[in-house]
Image 1 (tube, rainbow, N blue to C red):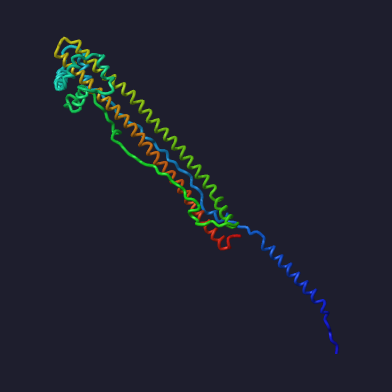
Image 2: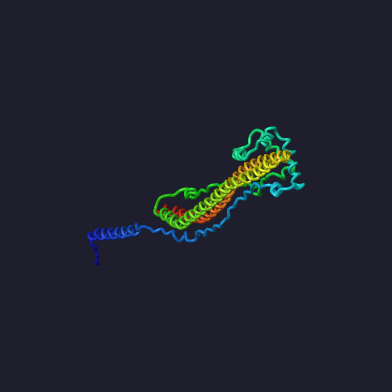
Length: 349
């Protein structure tokens, strides 16, 4: 019977070879596992949307109707009748009597002004910053004078604009930060890739928002400049109007005085002098009141125009910021999904 014997010395060498081959296979496998994983999130942000175009509807700012101080048509007719010479009409005589009778109710200082009135004194009174003493008291009395007296004197035309008023306010708008939407941002290539994709997706909307806000600012600056131009133009008109009205009052008062100085009828002369003083006092008072009210109206209109501009600017800014926030919110939703994916993969390390 034959027996086969294996060479026991060869077995250790075989085992060593097998172990080495296994180690080599293991190392190859580990090298494959160490290949960096690529994280791509850009496509996930493609549907967050684009910024709509900005639509700025041009607004027209309100001009100012300043009204003015109107001269008396009745007094113009009296002067015309006096210039014609001859006998006065019954209407003119009645107007002289009306002025004479009302003047008699005023303080003694007003009677003295009438008796001693000169062209120089007329100019002096019109140049006053405001009436005082008996002149101021007379001006107050003339505010409540009978209609037939007021018909002989200047009047203020307060336009409808003097009754308008409005006010608006402007609030700022802040953008949320990314950290307010996602509670934590862990480290690792996956998280980095997700955040980089988020930032890249918002680059164009952010640039568009900045451009739109700049356009809004430029529009605002232009409108504010227009509003100030309206104010400055109105103030120029007030200054010119004030000088014109004072000159008209001086002309009428001096004309009445001139006829008083030219007549031999003492009663008519006294009546004309009182008439001239009444016209002078009421005219000066009205011009001062109109000037003050007109300047206040111009300031108010500027406030109203600026308020309209501010309201429109705020609306435009809210629209632009709101459009951006919608895009950003969608992007943040995508980002959170991506970050959760990173977390579920073990942090993306």
